[in-house]
Structures are given as C-alpha cells and as structure tokens.
Amino acid sequence: MKVFLIGYMGSGKSTVGKRLVEKLSRRDETNFDFIDFDKLIEKETGKTITEIFDSDGEEKFRLLEHEYLKKLLNKENAVISLGGGTPCFHNNIQVINNNGISVYLEMSSDSLINRLSKAKNKRPLIRDLNEVDLKSFIEANLEKRKPVYQKANHIIQSDQLSTDVIIEKIMKVIKKEK
Ligand code: S3P
Image (cartoon, rainbow, N blue to C red; front, side, top):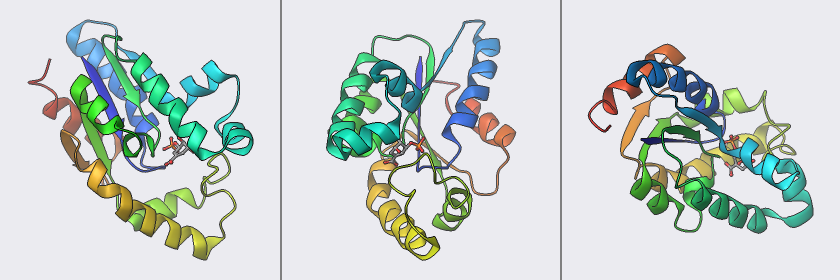
C-alpha cells in the first residue's frame, strides 16, 4: 500500500507522514517507509529545492518532480509526503491516484498564512514576499490548486485538529484499502 499525502505548503504533510508510518507499520506488522518527497529530490539531485529553483527555474523543478514521482511507483508500503505543488503539475494527480491512496490535508488560507509566515525561508515561492504579498499569494494560489487537491481519494479538514487526531482519521479512512 502506498499513501500519498497532499496539501498546500505548511499543511503538516511531513509531520503527519512520519508519525503515520509508525502507526501503519505497527498495525500491519509490516515496515512502511516514510518518504519526504522534497528531501528525496534534494538527495537525488545533490541540490536544495531553493538551489534548483534558483539555478534551473520552476519549470525544471516541476519536471524533476514528475520524473521522481514516476520512479517511486514500484515502491511497496510507503507513506509519501509530496511537495505542495506536486499534484498540480503535469498529470501527477492521475499518477498519484492510479498508484496509491491519496489524502488531502486541507487547511484554510488563514491557517496557512499564519503557519507559513514563520516558515518561508526554505520555500522559494514565498521566501521573498512581505506580509501583505504573502497573504494574497497564498489566497490566490490555494484557490487555483484546490480543484486538484480535491481530487484526492480522501480529504481531512485539518485546521483545528492535532497531529494525533489527523492520524487517527487517516487510519480510519485507509482501513478498508489495504
Ligand atoms: C512547493 C512546495 C514545497 C516544495 C517547493 C514548491 C509548492 O514543498 O516542493 O518549494 O509549489 O507548493 P512543501 O509543501 O513541503 O513546502
């Protein structure tokens, strides 16, 4: 079983993914791998995400995402926390849904703005934005991406939930999909 966590930057995909792996491994008595997709790209290319954006541009980064996503498909038993933009480029959302269970960690733009204003530095799309521009960028970009995120197999509205509760909810929805 492969579980793909999708959602906007700052929605908690990595934190949730790491802990979900422990729970799933215990439940199924099988070792699940945790894959932080940004980190995987950084490891494979030897560059940070920021360096890729700076030296090669966003378009090249989107191609790399597509390429590495396809390389992941033969993996068994893994939880993969994707980048915020991954599902929204090329035909990645179809690739994701055809090859695993996708879960959208949905968060309102207000929560995301709040969380991301303290975590901009390693995120090239927003690192140079001031408070006002950050707000309008996130609002507009989230609206644009939402229709794609909403194609996920399951949606967890996460604004008010602790990591533990989010994980419980994910465990419940993926229960029947071994
Ligand atoms: C991006 C999200 C980032 C990273 C890159 C672009 C996006 O991942 O892939 O900076 O387009 O939303 P996180 O969602 O882990 O921050």
